Length: 98
Ligand code: SF4
Image 1: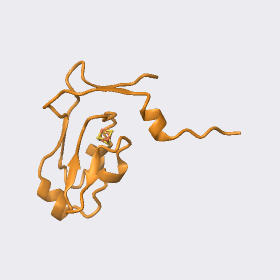
Image 2: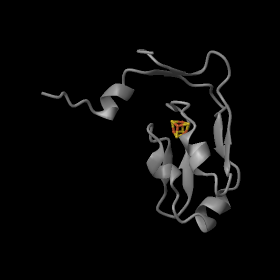
Image 3: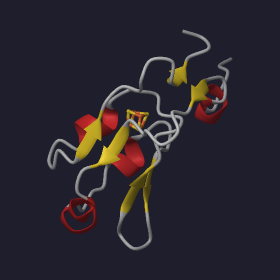
């Protein structure tokens, strides 16, 4: 018998220290997301749901809770529109179970 564990339950195990006013991920050119990126893949591939497709076509990112997997950076390769760096030391994700 297999045990089903929801992603949300696993994410709840992590802790995240916010570096206020210094998000480690940002969008370089918002117009590219809104008017030149049909897929907006970042809004569906992020395991932490940091990216949102807004009703007006804009994409927003809130990096609090980011798992530092780098998926958004790779998936945006077509437009290279993600400015991404690791959080400063002492900030960001703390994986409780490795
Ligand atoms: Fe989401 Fe991973 Fe990008 Fe963080 S690095 S915002 S977890 S896709």
